[in-house]
Length: 270
View 1 (spheres, rainbow, N blue to C red):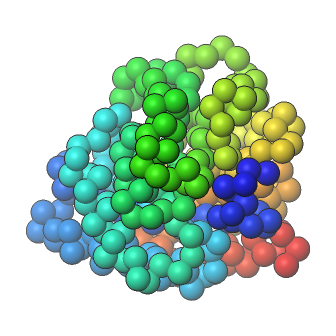
View 2: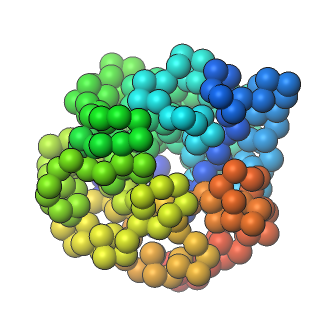
């Protein structure tokens, strides 16, 4: 297991919950009347519910900044850092960041807020809703080190949402190659879009070829699939199923969050 991953999450299979920020300034869905204060209020409510439910970590993401960008506006990064800073004194579990879909911005916000981990599409070439998607892992990891954050754990999403890989290799082969070439601390397997489950056969295949690397389910984990996912993977990242009615764009439902973590603890034998 990666030293950085273990330093953040310990030996248990982590359940990482999303704090989906409302749309940020400059994005089409931004609520100018509510302003940044409304973003902080929404994030605070979700943070409190997720921490009370006992999640192992949280991750801040700008899922509402649709249409997504491959090079995000400076306002997105600046506002995310501001929001996290406003909440920092009340965060009592490890937290990560993901600035969709810009690895350099993600690293910058992580360094500015002293996050413990990041999630991004760092490798591969994809035909996507945003056009041709070709991130540069070498540049992003070197940037992390330049920012003085060699300790920052990197979670590589190897099956991009809203996209199809232009690489003809199997997902398992791409995962194995990514670990060799690009030094991720963990590998994530996703479904086609936010809230859609990864295929269990792909999750299992990736874990078979990466027995020593943490492999997590990145999307679509639901209450009723916790046992199956935790039997195959080394943890999960979860968002949509914790929301009111299971709706990605609504607030966290404290009861759904508590129920989910009860199931996680049982699945981990706690």
